[in-house]
Image 1 (tube, rainbow, N blue to C red):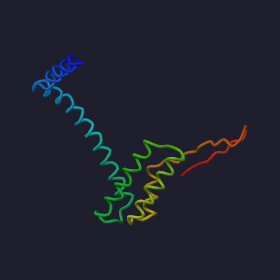
Image 2: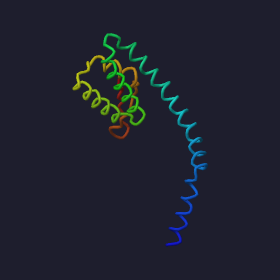
Image 3: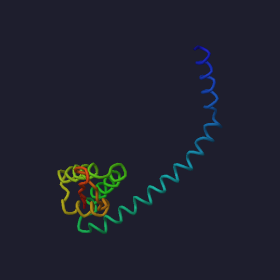
Image 4: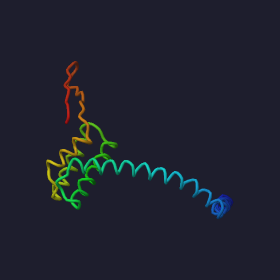
Length: 133
């Protein structure tokens, strides 16, 4: 085991040579900048959509609606079906408790949470279709 430790230490020592670290950083930096640019394009689009949708709120108040929209998008990427609907309801209730208007939140939900249908099976040969808005 001691040789294994020594070998790992030597390997780590080679990794932290300035030129090697600098090269790795340069490679990762390009990916980081590209990723950030893509995020900013999406963030600006979301902000502009919310500003158009909710134009009767001051510039300070609109920030919270933008945050709500971004949280909805994260939910949409992680969940679907009943779970998504429950998570959206919890999120809406959280922001309502913080003082945001329910109708404005609903308008934002309609923009980012798509209407879809789920087939629910009740019994052999019996199905029900639940559509969510």
